[in-house]
Length: 354
Ligand code: NAD
Image (tube, rainbow, N blue to C red; front, side, top):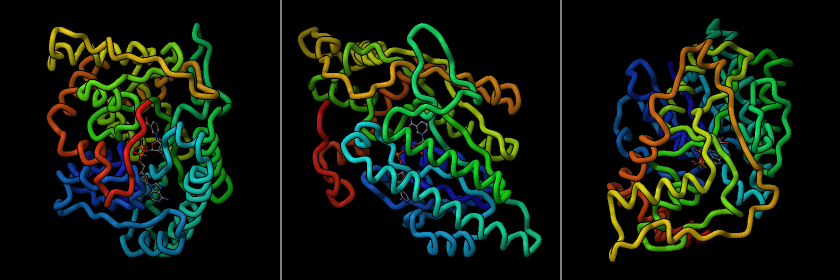
């Protein structure tokens, strides 16, 4: 299949590209604008593959996207391009509305034109897979509850509101125009090539540099965690075997409080990279004022994708986290330029800590 992946230079998109390229019957076109979060270094292992191609473009540029869809004879779109960091959405929501809402509209509009042209040529095989988050469902009490595909949307942050809006647009293009869409909503991802503004890589790298390990509030907020390669596998499954018009929740059955996650990283590092003088990494944990509107708990019921499509995560949170810590220890060539603000022509500047 000829698959266009939007946002393929990002954390999950690059894992999806690396996964899809393994199948020689796929041809993968990675369309990415290369914002601060896009990093072609994450694709170094596949950049010379015969069945992979990168095109720098903005999903908001509808005529350019349509031209690419036509020229590349695209048979499926996996839409991951987005502004994705909740904290940034609080400081600057405009970019989130622009890319996640307006950009998704333009991509849908180009996809609809392309799909209709394909149909005129009797090449009806086409799919638009929209990749979204469990944050569209809002938050759950600490004690109970779980998100299913039927849970009403109740987003809390500018990020999750913009993703919810994009989910609605995609469903509407399916219902109104018959575009063959499929959706998935996933819990928090972690793993190799994770941009170090997010909790897990930030904590690993701050710990290695003996810097404070920031934890919001009391660290009680609960997230469900999924290793990114398991997510990529789930996405490929939804794309190829999911039913048109349906959505699938994807999760790892691995609910942890933020404090548990940070402490687990500290304990792994104590084993593999002990601090000097017998000090413990947990001593670096620093509680910082809570994020406004911070959702208490997310928990995802992924029984539908497990039951109907036969997907299940391959790895426990404990082993995935240990592997992730090892990856960051062994791959400073990837993260050091980001930490030092020298990658991507120094467009990023220094990261704020905490
Ligand atoms: P990311 O921020 O790492 O990557 C986003 C990518 O999109 C970057 O490469 C960026 O350059 C690109 N991009 C941004 N604006 C663009 C535009 N206008 N045109 C083209 N490309 C553009 O994000 P991620 O963590 O890999 O998330 C990917 C998708 O998965 C997002 O849609 C996100 O909402 C969703 N998601 C993420 C998680 C998670 O835990 N990270 C969980 C569930 C769902």
